[in-house]
Image (cartoon, rainbow, N blue to C red):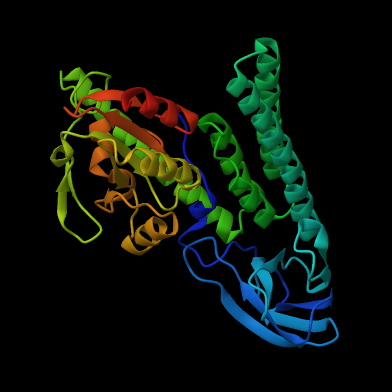
Length: 390
């Protein structure tokens, strides 16, 4: 396998990432500066499509408040002000948690939850944000050098630097997962492992199951991960069997006519790929639960808006299981092109037909339906479209 996509949505299917505790609840005692008197809400967050649930409401007076909730498990929560959309995230790892913050500072440095798990979470996010800034600065320098098409040695050095930053960040994420004393911190960090390969995930995820055997979130995550592996292994086995029998299905090659298929669109009506013949078509395989897919969608949107008037369109194929999150993701990410799905997760008919083992994945077809490129991401997508849609 190439790699298995892992995101926070791996936790879908259980109420909340949690760990059994002896206590029957927790209390947050807070002091929030520069906040007018108003209501403050204690909400439980879920690693799924379930909306946040309000567990307690209190009056914030002179910056002071106290909220609490009954809970026998460690989970993920948020304090949200009545007059403010954003909130303060925290983990209920202690019975009593002291909170201090500044309503004028919604950055990571503007709030503190005094407990081990929350200190660990804040440290992780702060360090990750520093690495992100370094990555973006280097990426901008690379764009400038590429734009002016000069100083090749400087460009080579910057590309080497960004590769180092990227590797260090990935190593940092994996180390955080392996060292985390809080299972919720570990699961949260797992949401950033989009670039991890299968070998790393095969080591890290089962190890979490052994470290936190009573943790319902980790148990559900390990189960989901194993299901993904099994589904992809079965798809690979079917491809090998087809190839051994002389059937080229499931092996997409440049120059071949793309395998045709028909699936229901968002309105439940059948739609066939070959009906788009005569146009350049990007067949984009994704899912609402796939973090890397959602991260790539803005690039796809930009490409679509730039080239849709030049005989180009997109067909989105989703590996979702449920229609509601699929439709919501389409709306949230502003995906205006045709979308289809059989809602069968990794048993989606195109997995075997096209032979892909991870998402996001795509193939670019010419007006005759022949494959002219595969796995176009970010700048590569823009460059290829600019090349063929002159």
